[in-house]
Image (cartoon, rainbow, N blue to C red):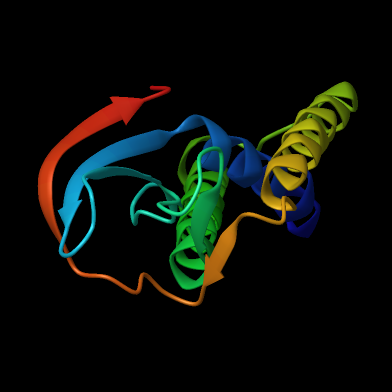
Length: 136
């Protein structure tokens, strides 16, 4: 069971963090209308100071990642307990880790730009206009 936590839950959480996205159209106070991305909390926004840059909200990002880890851990535990024992072929964790590594490498290239802004939490208040599901 502990092996499943590492081989299934972590890579699936990383993949889900990249695939299941919600686009929040918001009107921040004292700023232009903007899109925020993330589920269940908006953790990434377009930067207002230059094009092609992002604002990253670290606390919301960590909470999003923990949300996915807990959800997948709970799904694996419930399937193992009530339905059947999960037998994972050896190639599946390798494929999941390769996909996760590709996502992490691509995301790190986007996030190490010098124009990006990093905040502990979202430093502005906003009015939510609409929510769009992306990648589902």
